[in-house]
Image (spheres, rainbow, N blue to C red):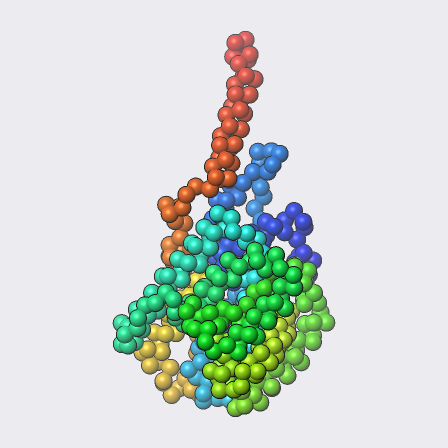
Length: 418
């Protein structure tokens, strides 16, 4: 949550199809990553007036490119975490990336959550695409720390561990989607909630609720965006303007390194918990919201819209997101980041390239095929058949029976004459 700008504005008849398809696709559009259920759903869907299947919606390269590039930035930022203390330049790059990489991902997630209406099919995909991976990896990360890191870690489904907070947040955000479609001025309301959350230290850590609330405005904004809004940021003038904006942002980040608590970028603590008066929280929340949106727009303006070598990887970003953390945590527990060579410029560059390659490989189809049973399980055995689906199947069977009867009636005179 990138060809020509016109390709971002789907025709009225295809806009919903495109939204539904991406809605089943990864931590950004947390429901694909691989369209298996899309194909089966499309094979069952029929047009109202005929028997031909509804044409399969084509994925938009822009958004797949955006998701892939965003997940690479996420992995790079996580890699810089144990190294940034030795280099002010690396820390500045870390601050810059953390200002917009998750907001960009969340905005895209919100955009592809617009079709969520609480219907049985949507709820089923919510469970199989978010709840099940959350349970699996919320169990895997503590076990990794216990048996590889040598530090016993309790398993708690109410306390998201490391990367899993995003799945928890996305589950809550999607469930509230119908509400945000109902209220007036949803973005200001969500921003007000986030500002209040940043000044409320007693929310508690269950389900990482402070972060859920403080990142909420980006998701709600995505819900209210249209394809033409993404087309606007890809104008040539915006691309050119993005160059000095990013240059200034990097310089400002370098200046801010010793002056600002990087905890503000994680959106998981209140102002009081960061050691400042309560009123600073809403002010920082509002300022960071503006900065994050500006940098997100600049980032999206540089994303190619045509099909690239990495476009297909955009359908597997959830796999890369959830599994790259296992590699980084293993390296951390084994002390690999403590090697002196990695704390020099060449070492930092090498690690950055290595993690970019690793997360790229983790988004590929072979990895998705191996891990599909835990990241995108079918789980047909766990759900009742949808009444609408059963009605469609009955209608299909009756239609096919009628077609067979017509063919037999047409063929019968010829057989008798013969």
